[in-house]
Length: 276
Image (cartoon, rainbow, N blue to C red; front, side, top):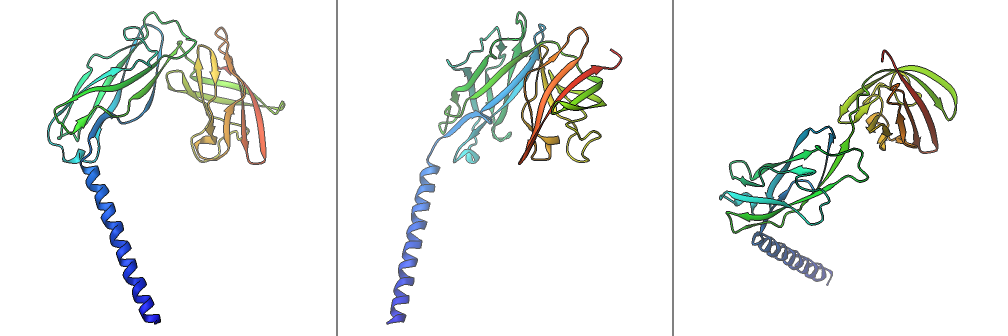
């Protein structure tokens, strides 16, 4: 009787296994009949430019994706446009010279669309950064491709002219006491984006990671975004309050904290430029 019982269980198990295979294959067949979509490779993007009348060109990747996208052979022409949710104004904040592009099999149906950020007539800082929501509005060339791909949210940050890169004599107070003096070198890493050479009380570096911490200057207002210590450790570095830049003297004042499990310290730093 035990042998018969085990044989029955084995037969039932095979039946259930085969049923699962049939269901999975059915789902795959249905997916193969689905449409492919054209759209952006990423759902978010941020651009920045100094509001001095200059124009800044930024490229965003677009593609065709879907269950049968690898089997397509025809060229696909895609037209892009802004959605009604956009607060960025065409002709004021941005310009798109070519709104229609052709994606080809030879290029794996990958392409780029260029958005030009305009700054003429813009007085920074703005109360809110304009946002451009861009999506594929029309797709032609293959009946198996539609314009249902995801749009992209492009945040447009306008900055004032910033020139903080240089060598500084820094005085640091840790938790309001024990002043420490040292030399810090600030490097420009982007539009209004900078990185120091020192962070916290580990003067001279930690021997790993990227030395210092990143901060942003937007029209003489400093912000320190949340970031890992030297982009390596789990300790969290973050601004405590908005920092300042004295436009006359070039002196920078930043207060940030470093925290980890069980402890937290606040660092009040004053950077005096050398040779300015």
